[in-house]
Length: 236
Ligand SMILES: Nc1ncnc2c1ncn2[C@@H]1O[C@H](COP(=O)(O)OP(=O)(O)OP(=O)(O)O)[C@@H](O)[C@H]1O
Ligand SMILES: [Mg+2]
Image (cartoon, rainbow, N blue to C red; front, side, top):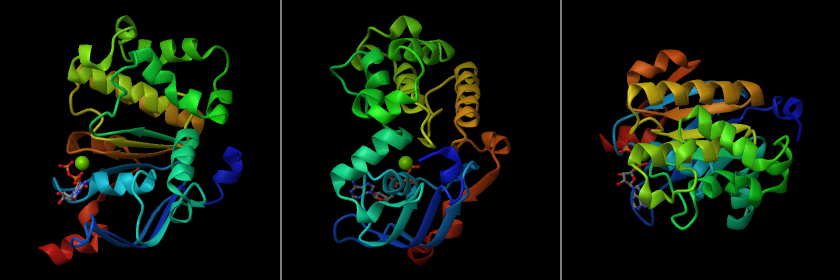
């Protein structure tokens, strides 16, 4: 789908979503949450309030038993697990809170992985894939680490590899879960500059979860999960 077509509907539209882990009390109960295409949203909330769970549902890692989770025009609840994985690989950039790097692949191979999984994502990269990975890595100052495996890297270095992997191939929605938690202020600023540049160039929507409220002024909107999550209201 072209960027113009995807701009016609919101990047995210949640309706009547209820999600619980196994048979427990709901973690999320959201009547409506909409993020317009191209918006950059800062999402915050107490530890354990359900931020990572929400991102898991928006990226199809988790599936809701009730409600609509429409992402870039596709209702993820109507897709099988493998179709959700394919959708994520093609169209989303997800910086996981725990990074989720593949331990037996080098940093370089981790970064290019989304473009190897999805041919349409690969097609959005002009020129050799490795050159694009090296361009992104240079901006995050991890060029010298590209032959290392995740277990040989510091936590902040792993976080930057995870960020590079999410940003390669112009994803239309970038979802970042505490992506600066392990970074010093210089590396944090390099990452944020790259993140905003990448989203602007791709016309992408950004959903950024962080406890660091000093960053929120850089975003179009700041959203507290407790303002939209009725499960939290019930729990307190
Ligand atoms: N895999 C799981 N199985 C069962 N319960 C879970 C699981 N993952 C999270 N939870 C529970 O769901 C709730 C929300 O967790 P979540 O990870 O979404 O919070 P969070 O807002 O991202 O917190 P943090 O700021 O600490 O990262 C918590 O009560 C947590 O214990
Ligand atoms: Mg979390």
